Image 1: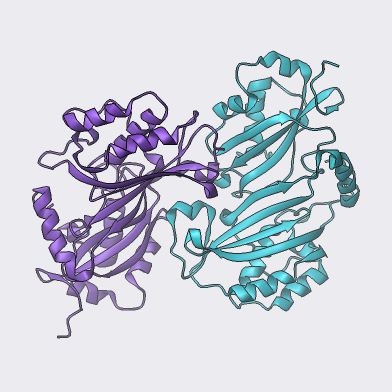
Image 2: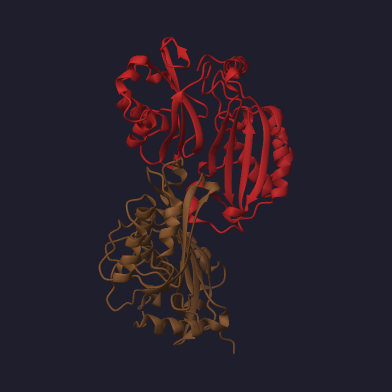
Length: 288
Length: 288
């Protein structure tokens, strides 16, 4: 009864990690040999703190961001042994230790024992992404350059909003995803809000909420919205691409710098396990 | 009567340049041999557009920012000949051409003929700077890392505001400036506002307005305010340093990343010449 409170998986203790990063210098979240990635940097720091892990701490993440994409609020989990935790002592928090090792472009906001049933990826109920565009009339702010797509011409936000409506609801987003074998591309787009931010000189903000996003999906959708908003495509082309759901949609995928993962939604603690089971079933995937 | 409207100085036409920059990669505004500076990058781009200039276009600037300091809104002027302008043709604006040459971390917001009497430095009536600090309780946002000073401990803003009052008004800021021979260090500090920005998770913003700032002055003042706000100095030490006005104040100068020049104030067009004359007299300086 003196065990740490929280979830134990196969005798391991699960920790929830809240973090943020500037993705400019990284080849995305996921480990890839020969590339600097956020996950690899985090694993390296964890190894310095906890020692070697044969299974890379069984790390899982809520949003596997692409190269150059940022995260204001990302969530991951790892599993560690009670012995690893005990060896650490209590002089400094684990978040503090990790932040001392990591570069300033990755920050650990919290590192805490996860509630029972918590799975960073499968317990999540929604993901919220934001894409920023400084179009024609907006003064290009060099202090926002790393986080904003710059376009020379003005975009028509009424047209963009019309295009956005086509994406709302349950669709097979296959035409707007990079294929991953065995993975479903059916997603539920809950909302797409489009506005100009007066605090950023009128920069366009596209905020997308879905249960989950497949690989490349936000940037492919934003590419379609830009095409419609600049009058180079009809919104019917979006409708058609969604309906066909076979080959890639005929829009240019937007470059990554404007994209930031801003929120991962989870249910109340007593629903975490149930939600994870629902998601696993829906995705018809193996454990990863 | 078909001459360009605007100010002619010795047969030259004066242009006002509004620009912004991320200072992270630059050794400050002012040209320095062997260093990459904002002014040098701008002069290089101007030379590509207009051709060689024997006097470096007589460029003058409103705020000579230090290494690593940013500008959301900087103002400079240059003088060019009518022949140089004529050679350009009219296909693309000069701002567009300069932006095509410059890196994304410098942006020209406008490039227009200056009104008569305009001098970027001497016509200015005030400068407004903003210094951002994410102290102890504020989550460190990697997307703001380049523009924010991070401190591990919490600052007491009531103490900071008490310290700030000491700086208000006309003082000899010699103890808070890096000396420049022949230059007065008497400045009029109009206001220092201190608040937490709820849109940035509670980041502290110190906004300073003065007629002008001497070299290093904002960062030296912020260093004093931080010392008072963390309880390592008494506000009377600020009062004393201002009164003595001889040697450097005993506070650590704040690092530059948190500092941004946000506004240069100018009077109405018909007061530009008069204001420039007043400033020149006050500074008791040569023409530069």
